Length: 112
Image (cartoon, rainbow, N blue to C red; front, side, top):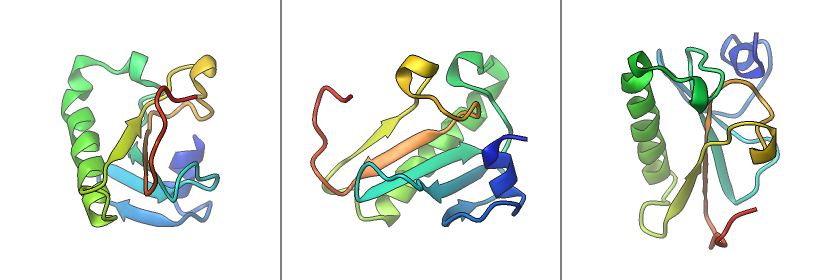
């Protein structure tokens, strides 16, 4: 089981923002911005490069959930960033696709 599956199962505590049949959203334990929420599919897709055409509906649902959560967090007026890491050079640390929702302060470009 991935870390995120264990959180969804209630085995590991987390600050849960959203939990439905397809999407889990939690606050990052090592936030990189005042708002740093991970938006995670309940079904494991190891990383974006392993997503299949059949995952397209779920991927769209993740993006819409990130949008809705950003609005709930008051980020829709000032802006926010969505980040998906793929592989070790990108900073991927959990092999379970997730979107980082970052906001609450100006974010530099380029990142990293």
